[in-house]
Length: 125
Picture 1: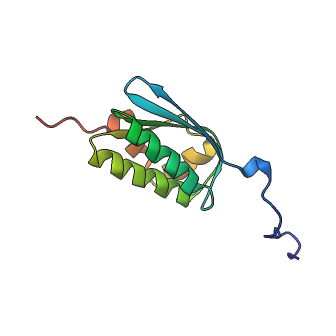
Picture 2: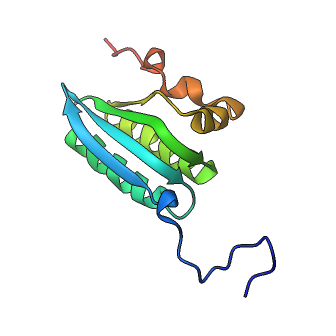
Picture 3: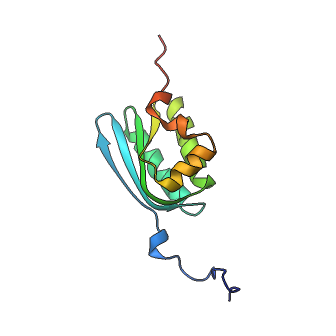
């Protein structure tokens, strides 16, 4: 039994904390919509979906974070790893409409600029 105010680890997570994703093509890019909470438990799920979308895209992935309710450093690290992989393959990762929660982490860490369309490197001659 957990102490008062501390969740019991044997209690299943509520359905509100479950991560849901959806992806669809949009021209040469894939759009991935992330809905729910992204933390150390759910970041690997999000990461797998994002890697698959990157693999299936011609130019990169747009990540819609408008429905994210929780976003921690595990989520940010998954996004940064995806960006590194994308750039290694000549592709990009753009964050669309981050929720207030996701925007706060991106802003506090100075990483928001890495996921804007203006951060796309120019092709080399």
